[in-house]
Structures are given as C-alpha cells and as structure tokens.
Image (tube, rainbow, N blue to C red; front, side):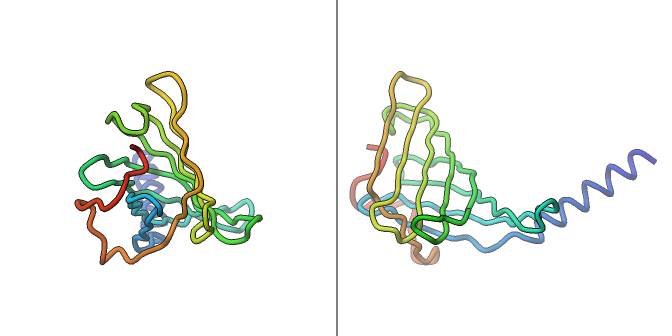
Length: 152
C-alpha cells in the first residue's frame, strides 16, 4: 500500500509540474554576445493561492562556455515589471575562473543587469550595466558569437 501511495503522489506531482511548463524564452545581453535560454515552470503556492515561476535553461556564449542555470521569475517593484534571477555553474577559465555565477536583471530595463561570480578562486568577478533583451528563440544561433562575451 505504501508503494502505491508513493507512486500515486509522485505521478500527481509530476503531472502538476510538467503540465505548467511553458515555451522557451530567449534573451540577449547587450553590449555582450551572451544568449540565455529559459523554460518557465509555474508552481502553485497553496499557502498564498498564487504561483511561483521557476526557470531552467542555459547561458551560452558560442563555443566559449555554456552554463546550466536555474532560478526564478518574480515581480519587480522598482522599476516595475518582471525580474529574473538565475544561478549557473561553469568549469571554464571564463568569469575570472570562478565556478558559480548569478545573474539578476529586469527585461528591457536599460543597464539594470548585474552578474556576480565567485567560487574556486579568491575574489569576485562582477559585470554590471548591461540589458536583458527578449528575442525570438527561432532566430538565435548558440554557435556563432558576435562581439565580446560577458565572461571575458
């Protein structure tokens, strides 16, 4: 009976999460060449009656690096709009040879993006004042980098 209950609960949870998945959303990061591809998953918060929006995907700069990322989308108060916060890990010497990077930005808010990396070596790697711009995923190429990568 315990196995049947566990299987039923697991199957129900999987159906709820996968049923709320949305299409991929892509972003450019001017003045840099990085591309961020995110898939959104909405999760019901029974305590508040609202939802949380999780994001998963990757952050790439051509053949230079690819960071698997996870994070969330939230409402921004100042300026208004949607705020995206993600965490990615990487194993290259980019981003000052650090292993853990966070990205915080409000789409289309000029020069409001910030990136901070730490881990593996002493110090920090910070990049500020860039813009997160939504773009069509259909027109993007992850192999060709035009311009400077954010992690350089």
